[in-house]
Length: 223
Image 1 (cartoon, rainbow, N blue to C red):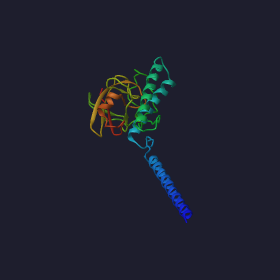
Image 2 (image 1 turned 90 degrees about the horizontal axis):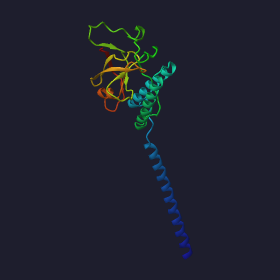
Image 3 (image 1 turned 30 degrees about the horizontal axis):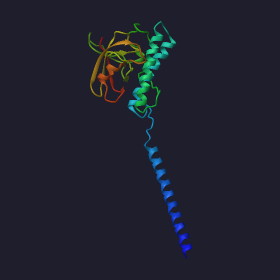
Image 4 (image 1 turned 90 degrees about the vertical axis):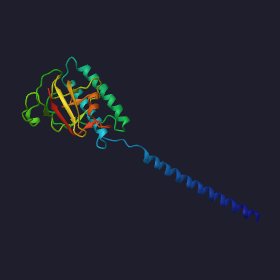
């Protein structure tokens, strides 16, 4: 009689241990599933405006480097080294923002068929076939250029300035963010892979918080 009770007790203990083990396993699976669901997903340029802006900035700088390597001059190595440092900083920003590190996207403006000018080279206005001609304007007034272009940042430090593949150094451009009506007027100081690429200081004057791309931009040549 005592032996039967002992065996019965052992069976009950075994069943309870098995139930706890199963429950624990289920809890583990649920916890693992929950952790997996909470793991941050790497975002691409198609997922995030921030990622698109950073990818565009990286692409513009890479285009500039490619142009310098295709047609080098005495200053190309220094320019390339500077832009490579800028790209490294953009990659740091991509990682911090949860974006795909190293992703590159090209600016949407259609002026890529023009050869990239060297610094100081007088290129004048873009050819008529690449951009609709702007209406005639009185002397000293602003002239809209690069219609439809987006604007992003180069990642370069220094006083507010711009770089461009359309206008030579010394040209004055006014860039307006139509989403917040903020404007900045800057001098072109170097060449890049887009119509107007703002350095960090200039971009800060017109950006929306947390964004690295101006989709609705008005670019004007004012001098």
